[in-house]
Image 1 (cartoon, one colour):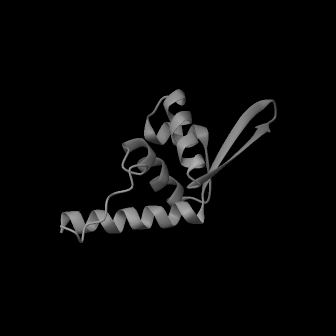
Image 2: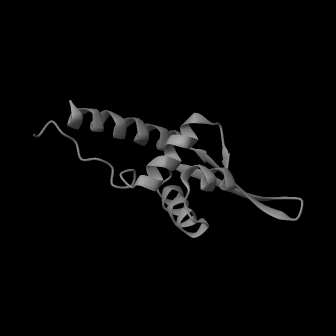
Length: 95
């Protein structure tokens, strides 16, 4: 069993994994898009995005559209590598 590498606990969370999967598919995504696609609450999504940002897996840009706040997320190269490693490690478990 030594050939198995531990799965990244940060990505093993269902919501964080869903966010990363969505961000891989698009160049960037607004908070409202991620909230809608993951069917999460704004509070929970904010907490999970903060964890991903602190790990360097995503970057978050806060701005305004008119008078409304706008939060945009992008996956970083570190996040992309972590996601690819996670998927490769997961494949080893299920083969």
